[in-house]
Image 1 (spheres, helix red, strand yellow):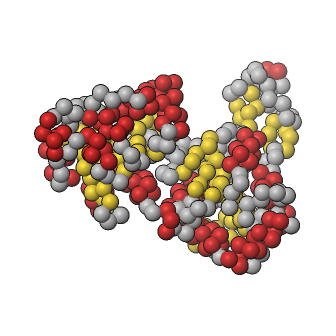
Image 2 (tube, rainbow, N blue to C red):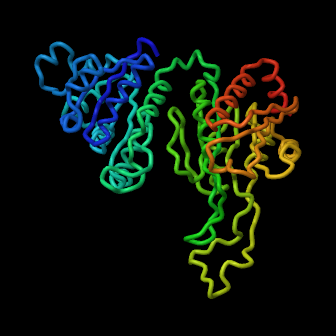
Length: 411
């Protein structure tokens, strides 16, 4: 990241104080910052503190003749490798989504020819408002990158999504946006990852689900993106924010997930990490099932589509590498290997979920392939993801292995 520079636009919100730590975190990674401080942002952090940390002039006024003479808003908007908006308020998002430019920040955003990364921060109701979500969709369609928001307690006392991502998370997203993709092992590769549980509706208030948090799949998607891959993450319902540099598709049921995976193909690799429900209620009622009328006993179930098997056994368009996950509690390796053979996938990642793996922070896995087994000892899920991503990259870049995979694909 040496010699890289960002233009940091600081919106008005209590989360603005995190922008100071973001500047320091980026400096530790070799990234310099130049800042635009909005009038609202200046209510929370001062130009003096921001200038002391960036070591550069802080810009604020569109109609400052001295600033325009020394560094006009056009040049300012294009002087960095990346424009970062943190906090990205509902107002700043709305201005950019609708092409408004009435101050230095919004004018710079319209004038820039560089990528834009936004870290939203606002009250949960403002974030959930239809107008904000509409602006979010439009900005994503326009190519704006996002990190967060996270979920938690707000300064206003409410709880929910809307917390600005932490400085290290934003710095990770900055690194992902600034990296030279051409030099990375998965550059030019498209990868589809599934994660999380599925929710199978029983009635308007109940569903069948499992304990999956989605953390391993999200970590894997992030690790693949850091290696330069174009990653599509198809996620069941989770409380996790989209990883930086990843295209997110959120679904609910197994049938939704299969349809989203098929739309995301073709791809070089499909990694099915989601804990998909094997069964769903045969009949979803439109009214709440009442216990006085027999309740929930004897609910008929029907089998869900097998996403891993469907992708692994595609006659045309099969990804070169298809990876499944086997969450087992007994005879873990034997059951996982049987699943690999039955489904027709290239690898099975086996893990013992009899303990605290589902929903927990750590994992231990064994990767089973036709060539043998490789075990990754218990470690944080992010570390497991890193090692799995490196193994995927090595496999997709190996000419001999790639040829074998293509032979499977065409058979």
